[in-house]
Every structure is written in C-alpha cells, then in structure tokens.
Length: 271
Image (cartoon, rainbow, N blue to C red; front, side, top):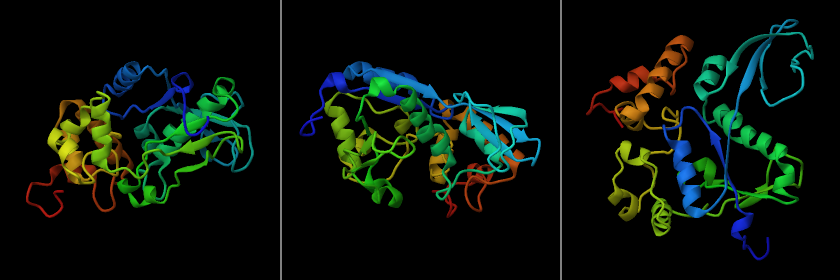
C-alpha cells in the first residue's frame, strides 16, 4: 500500500456469520460486494463444549482446532463432550449469563476470534502486511471513542496485520450519505426498527437503531421491542426469552427481556 491508495484487486471482504443477525444479512453483504466488485468470504464460528473429567471445568474448543481438547484449568486431556455452541444464544446458555460492556464475549467468540482464525488459515492469500478496515465510529459509544485510527491487530502473529478505522471520526449522517453516493441501500433492519430515510439522510443526530444481533444487549428497550414486533426479528427474540428463562440471568441489569417487552408506552422505562 502506497500513500494510502489501495487498488481494487487488493480488496476483499470478510463477514462473520452470526445466527442472531437479522435474517438476510449474509445475502445483503453478498449484494453489496457484488455491487462494488469486491470478493466476499464468510465464516461462522463453531465450538464444541466439554467437561474436564479431572476438575469438572467446563470449556469450549473451536471446531477449527485440530488439537485434542485439554483443560486450561488443570491441564488434563480427559474430557467428555457435552454440546455444540454455534450461536450467541447458545453461548449465553452455555455461560448462563448475557454479555456485558465489561465482558463482551459475543464479540470475542463470534467476531474477533472467528476472523483471526480465518486470517491465520488464509495467511498466504493475505500476504505479508494485510490491513483490516474496521467500520467503527468514535461517536457510537464511549468505548469506541478511545479507539485509535491505526493499530496492530491483536491475537495474531505480532507485526503481521494492522487495523485501520477510516470512518472513526465520521458522523452517522455522513455514513448514510456516503452509502447513498455509491447506491448502497441501508440494511432493511433500520427501517424495521423505526428509522426513516429522512432520519438517515437529513437528521444530523447520533444514536438510533443498530445493525447488530436482533436481541443485542446494547439495544434500548424501545429498539428491543421494535425487533420483537417485526416478523424478521421475532424468532430470535423468542429464543432469547427461552434462554433467559432457563438461565435466570437478565439481558440488562435489573430488567429481563420479558419485562422489557411488557412495558407500555408512557412508562418512564419505555425508551
């Protein structure tokens, strides 16, 4: 890469498949990459759950790993297989807890580690100094406001891959307008959650619906209800209700998903 210019034949896209994403997200990514002429690769993280027969520790092993399962708590290789973990809600059920700002295991297991595993397996194709471009924006959250524009990618061979955040300083409205400039239609989930095109292209304001898991714990109560009351999101929310009831751990501090869905308009906690 020279002077910040990357030729089209050097670009590829990678999508980490998450089963709790809005239905049709994989196809949406395929359509965009087809429109822009960028090759798309997609992988889904899968894990096997074991219990150590020595210390009874429960642990997960990536299905892409060729090594025999071993317990990091006691080092034993004696393990009994329990179940597969293939989705965020599977993982919530396995851990008997929802992710939080402090422990975002959904991101680490199904996004970061998934991509890193794919990158290691495709190191020859990626070359000596690949750069992964991230779509994070500083205005999205206090955590993202602390991110650098450029840094080395963690979890991989030191010095091999870098992260670049080209839109870190952009506003929400700038992202939607840039998409429109290239004839890229926003994912349907924005309108499904109540966001109008006027709000996308004409209102200079942060916040609003997220293109994330249908039942993301970071969503506002109003956005979770909107996700439940559209056809595409209901199945995911219903599975989340079942997992929450089985684990007894609530999606948000002090509020269960069931309580959030029952809140009526006008209640102080509605939004």
